[in-house]
Image (tube, rainbow, N blue to C red):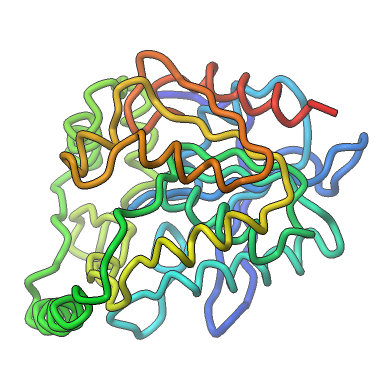
Length: 304
């Protein structure tokens, strides 16, 4: 099994009626002219997912990474769906507690990258630099889609309460590791075995359950409004590094509904945005090529 060279520490913050779990690496306080580095994980993932990239970082600095509500070791509360705006409020309160008055360096993967981009436009003074790892946003929508979307949301709420959205459980941690390797064929067994211990845990019957609330599978009732997203992008003042894998996971996922060309056009609304590509990697690029990702992050954050 993979052995971390920089083991994390954990803390819990009572916030917004939740007990938020936060993972820490490095010094307890920011220093040496380096602000706090905040790592935001993606959908159906956990903060421990960054361990391989953290191990590959060369500079010792203060790092924190929350488990988003309803993921990892942060319970979601008695809810049957999640609203994207809550991630922005959660992040703001987390920074008020762990980095008060400080402009942080922000790294987000996938959903976490989308949160990071939106937050940097809503609270531009709180972000010094931003690294977006495959946080592409969503396909543009039209107002005429709203009635169908609301109906879909209602139907999925009913399906959740009928037990039709339950996440699969596994006999053993090895079963979880096998699932991770099936989802990401580039993931090595030693890393999969380590991740499985953080991505799931045994229940009272001894079966391993994924640490993700099934309610996260409910489609948002609100349409993704591209005009709103771009207006927020235009308010980002921090330099941004947009990183993508060379495998074009965006095209594979949306199959023509949304592609890299459109994504790159959207990035043109960010005042200072650079782009980089990680080679021989898929969507979980921080698992596939942690050394490349760590080097890109550190080189960008070190720019004057």
